[in-house]
Amino acid sequence: MPLFSVWCLSILASNCLFHTNSVLNFRLEAATSRLEDVTIFQENAVKAQEETAGTSGSKVESKAKAEDDVIKAPKAKEQLEKSKAIQAYEDFIEEYVVPFVDISKKLDPVIEKQAQLFKKAIDEEKTFLWAASLSKKVSSTDPVFAEILKPINDIISQVVQVKDSTRDPKISNNLSTVAEGVPVLGWICVETPVSYIPDFKDSAQFWGNRIMKEFRGKNEDQVSWVKAFLGIFDALKAFVKEYETTGPSWKVDGGDIKQNLQKLSPEKVSQDASKPNAGAAAPPPPPPPPPASVFVAGDSDNKTQKSNETTKTGMNAVFSELNQGEDITKNLRKVEKSQMTHKNPALRASGNIQVHKPVPPKKPRNLSQRQTRTSKPPRKELVDNKWMVQNVVETAGGQPLTLEVTMDQSVFISDCEAIVVQIKGKVNAVTINSCKKVGVILDSGISAVDIIKSEHIEVQIEKHIPTISADQTDTLTIYLSKSSLDTEIYTSSTTSLNIEIEQGDDMKELAAPEQFKHTIDVKNGKLISVPVEHSS
Image (tube, rainbow, N blue to C red; front, side):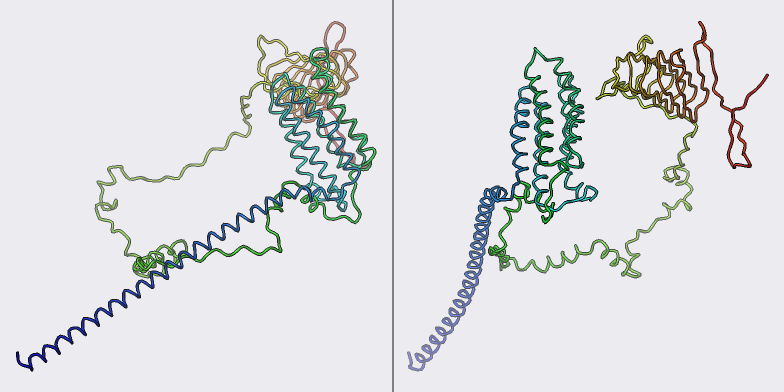
């Protein structure tokens, strides 16, 4: 081969080798750059995971510290100043209230539930007395006073609700005993609590005596239960007489009552203890979001476009529609002639057109028409000291409905029709409300018989009643015996009142006047009203 050709081939080979090396170097640099990007991304992801794990660890530590503070919270509560009165009140709870709850457990679960609520109310009252001994006095007319007593009032309502929601006659006397006695806890609202307590003991003892009479010699747990509950009143009176003669004791230079109640409240203590200390370092902020993946960067433009579309809602969408100008009519659909009723008689004749006529207003009910009674179950029940006779219509066989009463009981007859109620014994008072065609036969009474908003009522007095009053009653007949002729009768807005009195062996009817003549006394400027007499 000629020397010139060999030289050319060597030149060509060296050029090809140089070109190949350049390409390889470029590709190696590109691959290295990509590897560096991936490495940086992975390092950031690992770092973010480590920071997240550190944050969760700090949360666990703070939670453990909070639980430790909760355990220490009662100790802090015990360090608050406790007066001799509060210590005596705690002794009163342990000596009288706790044994009462223990005896209640032996009788019935419902009785136990009510007893537990009763003790809870006394515990709340202890917290109030403790806070009051550390606070400035709050007037009973201050709204704050009603606010701080709300927990006690709520529990008292629950105690009464247990009695109202239970209809078991076997335990009704027990539940009524506690329900009548629990308002004694209101002694903290009066200035003379010593004289306030015995009234509620008497109310509770009324039901307790029934239990004693029924179970004496049969069930000693019931007898012990009554004695334990009534003993609470005597012990509470002794405590109040010694420590709280004029009501709760306050501190002249004390703090705020609401703040002290929060300190003494177990729930509040737990909440405060679960909060981080003010001096402790704040927990680290959450880690920043990981960088976007280099492999899905191409979707960012589409997401931006979608987000702009979704933001056009609410008022933005309204203004966007208004700013379209003439283009706003582009979305309207064209109505063909075949769909126009004024150009298509056949469409009108088909009757497929929905015409929305205005709904005529309801005719008003005749104001003179009496509202029909809603059918409710009949009721004849002794509630506390009041007989409740309600919603009774036409007793079976027309027999009178008989009530055996005592001097401390009253009778309330409401929404009854076509019945006769016979009240045997001396009753305190009788009320007849919203009844029709009802007759009442009464032996004697201490106070009065009141008839309200009723029709066709007959009242017969066998012995004596001081007063009978009628208000908004139509057609009332009163039968008076010889021993009840001194009864005073008061009427207002009452028509057709007839009074029947004994005269020999017969009854004499005396009609009360309904027509009056009214004149004005010019000299004195007074109105003179006299009944009109018709002489034949």
